[in-house]
Image (cartoon, rainbow, N blue to C red; front, side, top):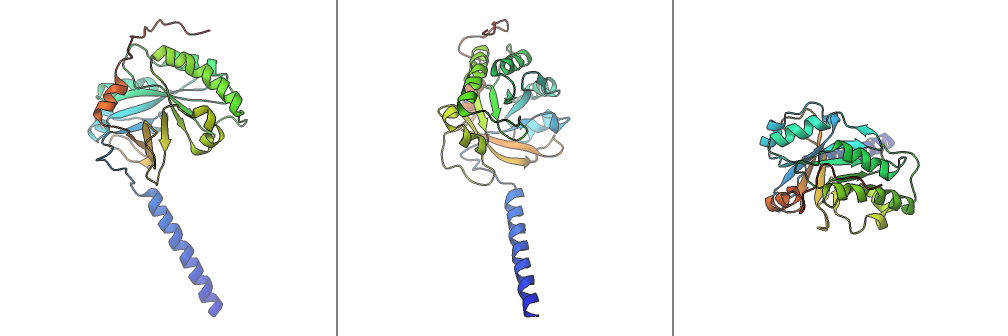
Length: 246
């Protein structure tokens, strides 16, 4: 009987710990909106049909939309999402999922061929992570070569410095390759202890009016003036006919 009580007590303690952990993971964590008043989302075809006017009315100021992946994949919701989010009054931008099994130059051509250059956009974003990527992980030296081959043409084409979204495990593996670059950081349960970032993804299961299901929630480092600066046209107008680097 005594052993049974000990077992039940241990099981109850474990259950309580799991419930507490689940609460803190799924609760609507949000950074201090007084300090970070500008909220945005990032989306892809996974969010399906989006009512962007309802999104804009639900305290969302910007959207970063998946455009491409690898050397030939195009997100089939990109064009509609970009058009409708812009029409709803959001500052809009595009991101590319960087794969490890295609040359960086091929990926740059894919992104540039899909994302319009005759409209105002937030800086291009490069998503570097291991989940969903090619099995072989390049060495830091290999990634540096291929990432440079991507960033060079993309930054020349859009006239803005690209922002890197790098998950924690990828950041540890490629710390030397991302140092000094503008960053989009991910922290779902803890306040950030530094200000070395442009965007902060603080929730990956958030809810926004106009979107059915979960969506990533983000804040911007700075206020509306910073968003306007990021969304402004580049210093020199970039022609859609600007040739790609060989």
